[in-house]
Each structure stands twice: as C-alpha cells, then as structure tokens.
Image (tube, rainbow, N blue to C red; front, side):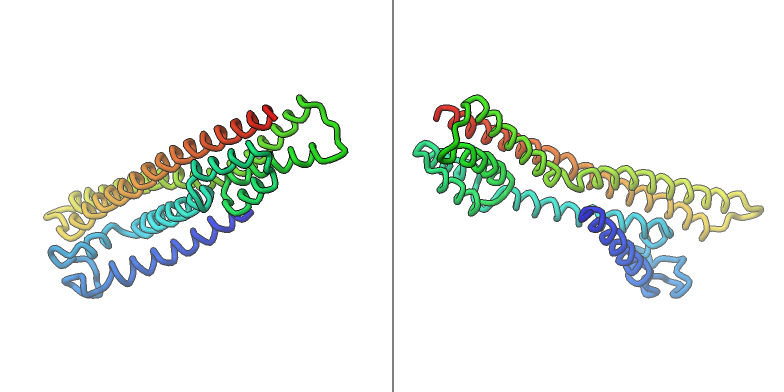
Length: 259
C-alpha cells in the first residue's frame, strides 16, 4: 500500500514538474528567434532545441525525474537496511556475545544496529531465547528447526523491502525506449510531410520534424540507459546483501547448534 502511494505521488509530481520545465524553461520565448511562436530556436540554444522535441518531451522528462527519485530512494533505503555499523564489525560483536551465551546483550546489540541483518538475527535469537526459557524442555532438533523457521520468516519480511521499486526502474527504462521510438516516428512523419508538399519544402516544418525525431530518440535512450544501469546496480547490491544475510543467519544457527 505504501509503495503504491509513493509511486502515485511520485508520478503526479514528476509530470507536474516536467510540464513546468517544458513550458516555462525549455519553452521560454527568450530561447527562440521568433519569440512567442517558439518554432525557430536561437542558434546554439540547447533548451530551445529540446523544446522542439514536442509534447513527448514532457513524458521523457517525467520519466527521468522518476528515475532519479527512485535511485535516491534506493540508495537511502539500502544504506538504512545495512544498519548503523558495517555488517562485518556488527556480526563480529554478535559472535562474541553468542560464544559467551550473552543472548540479551546480543539482542540489545541488534536493537542498536537496526537494519535487515540485525532484524533477522534478532528474530532468531528472540525465538531461541523464548524456547530455552526456564522451565521449558525442548528437543534440540526441534529447537533448531524453530530458529531456522524464524530466520526464514524474518528474511521473507526483509527481502521485499530490499527489492522495492526495482521493477519500477526496469519498467521506466522500457517505457522510455518506446516513448523515444514513438517520438522518432512522429518526427519523421512530420519531416516527410513537409518534404512531400508541392513546390519547395517547408523548411521550418522539415527542421521541426527532424528535431522532434532526434530529440526524442536521445531523450528516450538517456532515460533508458540511466534506468537499466541503476536497476542492474541495485540488483547486484541486493544480491550481495542477501548473501550477507544468509551467511550471518547460517553462522548464528551453527553457533546456537554448538550450544
């Protein structure tokens, strides 16, 4: 629910900002030789040239804004998931507490560390402590199975948080490619229409059509490349993080098993 709300708000804001950028920054009459008509860019004016890409530029700008926003959201989320301290240093202290059977201290350390690894280790230690409380006689094999199950349940809760919005990055990259292609086709249609007119071709319409085709192609590719690179980076980051979680939880279970 929270994710869908985030995406909805981000989409609305991205399109609003993109429209403002397109109309009032790129489409500023000062960028064009014919002012309010906005058809003849001042030579060398990049903003005006981008504006000639047509209405689809608004969509490409919005997709780029969404790309950047999701990238920053993932960076902060994964940093938060890592906890306050580096995972190796945190786990080293956990092992020391477990070797000394200081389960309360280990759980307290997890509370201070926070993050996905700490949450999963805390779940396993809390379950172990609950089952080994005074007055309870639990079979060792059953005890380890229960601890393992608590680890799996905690992992299932944490994994979606690590992978959140990654599908959106991939989707934006695909959409941006298609939008760029659509803009290219529309621009070429306009250019050929200008060339097909009787007599001398309409030079302005021809130039606008070619600009629309090239601007949309470039915009779509830039947005798609940014999304694909970010998606692959974060997928690799999540895979490494998941490996760290699995390794840490396995080592905790082995230590508990030795007890």
